[in-house]
Length: 357
Image (cartoon, rainbow, N blue to C red):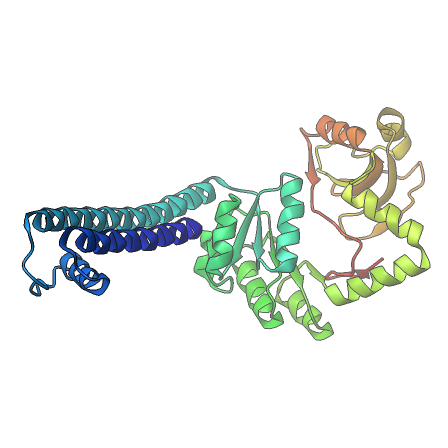
């Protein structure tokens, strides 16, 4: 829209100069005026100032003056009409976009609210959308709002620390919230507000300093990620065990290989509850390896033995071919709720323990 207006402005300027040149040359040729007198007559004619003629015009000069006035008037009216259309279209476009966003937000549920659309926020949104996870972005930048609209990403322009903003983003129907604004204090307020509005919400927050991690956990965050710690540990892992690091990253992202990793939570009515790993036939039917089991109380069972009994509320961490993982989840879809949280090999802090790669 801006480029169109700029191009139109250049065109108008060139046409204005051409009309002035046309009028000046007309008076020079038809009335024998000097170039300056012809320019003077053209300007006072087009601007309708009403000054007197340089000298009385002949019949051809008067006809030319009438033609020049009509040309100038038509040009001005056409530009006014275009300007009005531009203003109206711009307003209508904004109204349409707002209506479309409101319509999107009214339908969305079980989504993740991403507070902050900076460098981290953009990557998080990109990763979640690549997995078809619904998101709503909250940011206070009008400029970012334009980009979000162009990319058809549901969003709210406002302060994420305010209750009304989070309510507009559908926090009561949301599955989770990610607080990744630049200031730790703002992230703490966002977490406090979000937890107060929705007790069951999964909340993951960013902490720039070590002290902020404790405050965010006390405020109600389920997970706190420290970019500096995770980045440093990732660099160290690449130095100490590069092949292992590459494998884990590829398995988690699923990019460039058929192998992938997923976590699946067992509900009480799941048909696997009460069976051990051998009788579950997960390995035989799906060619999947259960590398860990997280119990409902948060206890982690690493490299579970074949006779490990599966319990209600367990989260199975499985690794295997993508298609097999998908088939496994689909077969259990009636009584299992797969957790599609996007994970990364970073430093996570929870209410019960810390873990990192």
